[in-house]
View (cartoon, rainbow, N blue to C red):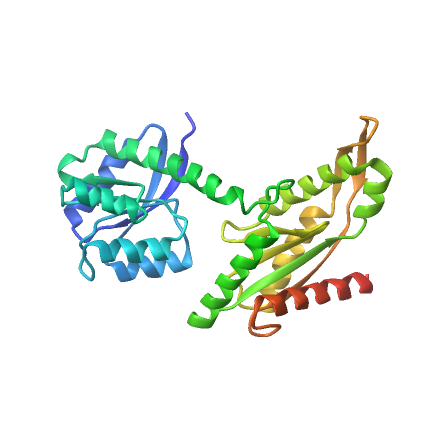
Length: 297
């Protein structure tokens, strides 16, 4: 039987308790788990800044933090990662408070069993996924299900503030479909909509989990690339996305007939700190770079 693999970050400074939790997940027949253990909040936060796991299991009291402060710090650093609290304090009121603060579930160590922890993890991931769908529905483009222009503006502001605070860089890619209008005019608007959906699927497929892909409007798309520090990295990402969408696609025309169309596109990028200091400047610079590349072809 195929078992999906999930990366779990475990915050636990007691080696015996950490062993019990790892052992409890070892015989999971539905999911396999890769577990990275951290014995301090500082180490966990540093790891979260580099790579996000599928789930976090955490104790509240560790060497450098305790109680709700631990929960609040992890929640802030984890952003969209589901959190399960496993702690030595068996207090129902505390469990309710932790869920209000953003935990998906709470398990006292005195009640911990393999079957309970495995079930809690599965239900926590499913519940978190459903909540994300509800939260994101207002921020999604109805046709492509990519992020909307409104969500893009919000994310750009967030990345700029993060970059200003921590001295980091990120890149903005701007994509325009070269021959979308002729295809749309020849085969009909439904075919054009299908083509936009194909492009959205390709952009999503060939993006990292940390990338933010949005429909800017019409046949234009924007991808935000956190943690991209150099022009070489941005250039490589641009080529990868361009290669993903410059391809042959099948659409259904207004007569219900399948039609093969070849799509071409142009792309440009901007790097925070070099091409702009705010979202508006970065979008403008990436758009200008895209237009220049289009003219040079």
